Image 1 (cartoon, rainbow, N blue to C red):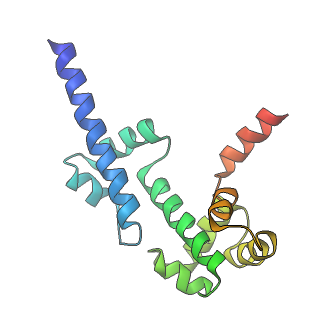
Image 2 (cartoon, rainbow, N blue to C red):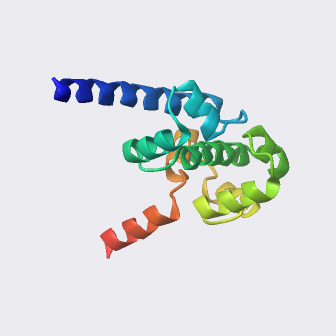
Length: 149
């Protein structure tokens, strides 16, 4: 009986985590924080963070920043917005934090990214450009390099 209760609770937690992830995907440009996400999911912030990391491999904040940076990359590829405009369009309140996170995730600053991607993807369909320019966290790059070695 206890096993069934634990299993049912685990499934309910996974459903809540999926709703949190879906909300982040939808509302990435809105001011979101772990406390508000946890409150809306009827979980404590600590429990949400731990369970989210177990389920998705990164914290809710890291997941949110990844979504924001992915969207920023798409806007920078378009080329019609300044880096500052892109920063605010994806929900970041600080240009410095945005630039730091972008550089950590992508490996180059937003301005350098725009220059590089414009030259490298000229003539490619947007669906191909999106796939080849998808952000990879530095730790994932290290794992990929070790697998290739």
